[in-house]
Length: 444
Ligand SMILES: [Zn+2]
Image 1 (cartoon, rainbow, N blue to C red):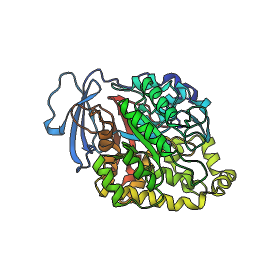
Image 2: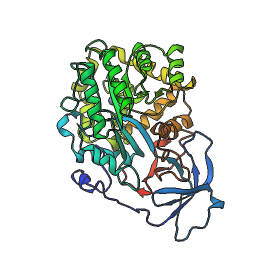
Image 3: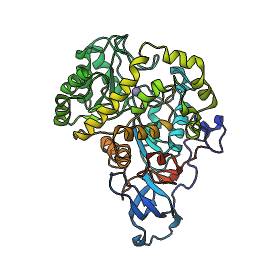
Image 4: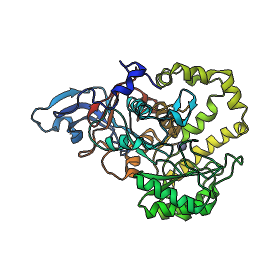
């Protein structure tokens, strides 16, 4: 859990949800910054924008800003403005330090995580299937308007095969038959979740995998309820079956083999999204088993409580991770994930941005900036990586109300002290974050 400026850890929950900073009652002219609009196009120097009532009302060259009655001016000379990051794959509320439990999930634990995301410039997250129902009012409150915590969408309790891989014990309701799966999707839909999530994996052969008749029942029931179906996937063969069954998006890279023209053609023909590459996940699951400079990085330490850092650096942690059955396979899986993410994007498959942040060691806030770095390592330009995390992920959401610095969109944006299109590590040089025009508390 990150430490948020001016707030002792125990008081964060009490303040979360209140508007702090300027609430955007009067219009504000932000001017003289370099604009990175989220489309992947060239940055525009000497730009300006007018924010009013939580939205961007005008954006363009600073010299052409229209006079606006009652507007105050914020001079951002030397700064860079980009849209807030949209992470399409996170898990929230269930982790304290390196320990994950259903019991930890409360409205306060959710808001604490959402406040951490906000402080790191992540302004919308999709929570992927490990939420209790108490997230729903928090989701509703964050749909629009000024916020002091990140906006969240939820897949509720995702679909896990009984005895199989995925979910958090005590939260998800594992299913054993297509009939049970259909009933569970109907129940999730009736609660008003945003998406239906399923896990199709076997932990490299260690667990039973969801049978295809069940995934088919889940996808069909999701569509009958007007919901999109998203899958955790690992194997190329499963990805092909899920596409044929009508899946709407994948929440990980295929990681066992290179993606081939059969999968690429099918994804393009059916408009299936590569929703999340989760490259930082693949890097994280083995990184902390080694002498790793990451825990010494001040930016990492901002995102982590001291107990988390101590745990990650402990010999026990190294033994557990490095001693695991799957550890020797992890570097190859990491590389395959990057290669496949690049291959899908280059082939013209629609793609978004997601980290799988939240579980132990995959820190909210830090993970998104690490993911941007991993995308560049995979061969994306910094501008392409930023567009994936903003404009492209907004296109997946389909609400048309965020993800770009554009008139009419929500004023969810990040002010940076250095140019992230020149060096992606500059995404970490955060000056201030706004959600719906509201300045959010920063990390200490
Ligand atoms: Zn996940």
